[in-house]
Image (cartoon, rainbow, N blue to C red; front, side, top):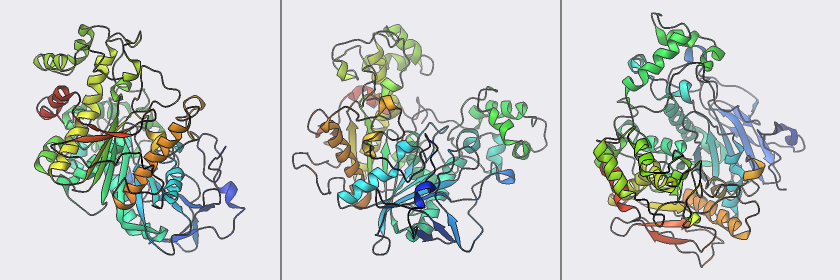
Length: 544
């Protein structure tokens, strides 16, 4: 099995340095602070620079502070041969994968990957996001790119919020970590053979939401940190209600009470002095704190992003944006057997009159509901007879409605937007989930061996040539867009495959990535009434 033997595989604990010893002349990169020594992979003809810090460690008195740029230099070489640990506190590192041999001759475009995980878990070293496969594909199609993946502070460490946090100006630290990493790339990527003027930010789920936050940061200020963006199952408009300090204050009070800082004169400083493991335990079920994520702060996150898009307050760069056919099947509550069950869920967060409108816009009609692969079948328990109805709503609510609104906004401003719907069920997925959330990742990265996945859910295993071809097409389209802003323009593309059209206001189309039929463009008008309800009421009812 073809495997990235030169990389640290987190699931096995094998160190990348074990294979580097067989090569002489390891790759070097001379950045502003000093020189890094990476690893050459003969298997992929690539150079890896892993675990490169882009900020000072946010520990001790730098805990719960804005990320600080590196302030030291060194002589000689520093190793960049192992991934850092997945994010907790001291985790502000990035990884760079480049095709070998280009750095002396040409500066390559850069794909800057931001991982998802609900702003509470994940990391750039997760091998499901192995950059070698898409970088290898980029070379094959004549569109070579460099891949960069990052960590950023998560949960409590990156998104603590309270009146005190606002007062100190230390809100949304995880998003600010991402911003500093982008600034580091601007200053240093040329040392690795990358072109700082050709950076595409790129992510999925919370990673795509992060891309959306960067597009709208500081009221849409363009700091020239990137020239394009890719958003997979996430949007500039957030996937849930956005809240300010008062929503987060009870969680903050619970934390400071649990760790002995409630009566401290300076409660933030007290938290900085609490031992890591004591404070970290509050995130792991010992205290009821709620979840921590991005919050409107009037600074980095100025206001609701639906409002910013309507005002044109976003960085105006080309985008790829899309979602999966059955996103809501991964998000919907189960046990939805009747209309009353569906309404009961809606009643927990929507006013009564809006519930009625949702029930009308999302009828119990299997011919129009998601998970089309089930045909006329109704899921049994634990899903429930009306699960598909509920899943249709939840997919639109979280991702698909905002995807449509974003594509329409870009098109109305005359900016290139390529919209897609992913429609292939990977291996190991229950039929009731279908083409659910996250299911495109293995295809987009061209991870044919399922590196980093559980053995029973490797995406293309046993699925045949059509799935391999789909992974090739999707990864090639992404690499081509990162390279020259056109997903259609790459070598080896089957002439039978339709062109991916730019999104148009009056004739909107998605490109459908499918393994069972020839990929094609479709009209983007499905579930029009329900999606319009979400988009027309994003501000007043949904608060985002």
